[in-house]
Image (tube, rainbow, N blue to C red; front, side, top):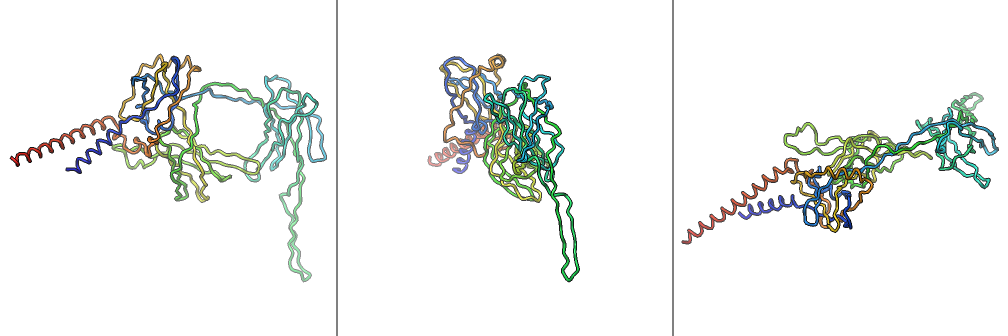
Length: 464
């Protein structure tokens, strides 16, 4: 009897804890009526329902304040590049194996801003040069816009080539002074001469002769690069957040990295890798939601993103692309990165960052009223507010929105180790199930009380 009562008590406490909300103050309070926005942090996403249906804004009297959940956006910068061929003159070959010349940009069409870079066109392969670009200063000297910038072509090793020299910001000038260092080089000829000799009582001799070939750096032309910048449509504001690596496993030529994302809205994953030269195919997976009637053939995991991790750090070259974008925004407790190593040694993963869009609640704050944000009640349905006027105000007063912040959560409420929405099947996290479970708990308690009362009556009858 006591065991049954204990089970019912534990079940009652567990079910009641599912509806316990988290309350956090919005700070600082406003001195006048203002349109405010409060960004949502990792704690909110760890405790709130996946679709944020349980999110509420409360005023000082615990009444609901109408709000809008907005994905923060900003104007997207578009850069358009155009090219113009310059005219070269006053070429001088120096004794230190360099060449000096002047190059002037075309006068027409007149462009509003000076060039941002130069492109040295050449058909030469397998080389490495350095370039200095200068302009005349008011004092009669020279100001460097590019200092020993490398030009290179590594076709012999890989398909990598760079002929662009960025220029520092400067005013419009009539011409530029360019110095190309190490303009001539020596390299081994592709063919070797082999001579074999024998006789005279001596052992056979094999002589291999190599010849050196001198090459000059021939430039077919120099183009100036001009940029036009404009802000067009908007793009989401994102932030990068370090996530915990739960474990790394190696099996069947694959590296499986499990990271804890804690319910964050993830749109991309960036990996920190120690190795310098590699290219590996990566698949990002999440565990499928547990639903009644789900087919077992679908597998335990579903693919939510895929791409290739690429790194090329060679001599002065450094190119790394370690970001994998997801097919869609994903909220889950954990994600898996499956790296296809093949027969190559596994990569050394030193850290993982998640790319997350910034969400915020926008509402009208009244002066002297302490507002709070409430979340963590998955049984609640999404609110239905009249937000038409609020959305119009957000559009008109976009630049006047004041950003506030949530007070830190209480220390005893750290992020849950496993989010409720992922630990239980979806039907267990529904309002209907919680109501039915509550009814069963009440019936069970009623049955236990009735049985206890009946036992007392029987004992009283026996004594009489």
